[in-house]
Length: 268
Ligand SMILES: [Zn+2]
Image (cartoon, rainbow, N blue to C red; front, side, top):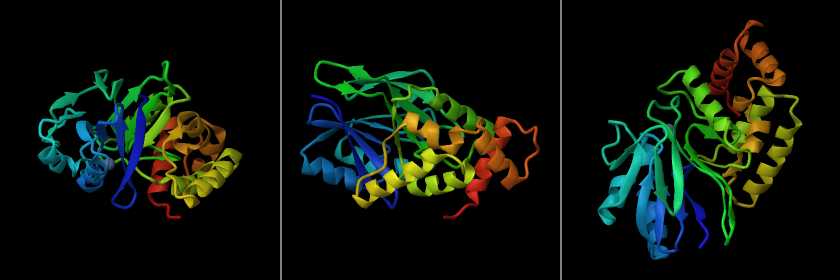
């Protein structure tokens, strides 16, 4: 069977991802709430094979204990962090794990939190289907934006995003929130002459109007339209310099830090 990745909505804007390889067991990514997971698992008569966690925030971990109560012994993969009690397999940069028949490499991507990790799997062209490369990146890279910097500093976050941006362009980016439209509205201010953003906003509006998630997105699209991956471009640098009164010799990281501050105070 080919891998199926499905989304469940939790809270207002969270996505919990389910990876199903064999139609009987699922791997759940960032279960902030057990309710939608248990509803889906019962509806399709599935059991839990494993849980992947990207970072310690409650909207990514709050459902783990309730899932373990129903499925004791489930492997819980997550960052080496003293903030998540239930992790059975602590991970750090470069570790490789196999879930749902896929090998994932762990990437350390601090900035949003210090313990944040992402899971990357290379694409696969098997006999049954062609599977693109997959990235589960929690609250680090969003469609059209990036997470807030709560525990790290702009340098860390910039380096983490740079790492993700170096993955293959055809990578499907599974982030944890439906923030795409708001992010792209801000992106138009931060990168005002980028017509790809205008086009993407139209597509995203159509997708949302059809009741479909805008996530996953493709990394190559993020590279063209996500201002947080475009601090090296003249367009973003000029807009940020003007808005945030940066000096002309500001570094790319200064531009990124100011862009993040601008977004923190921006409302659409
Ligand atoms: Zn978070």
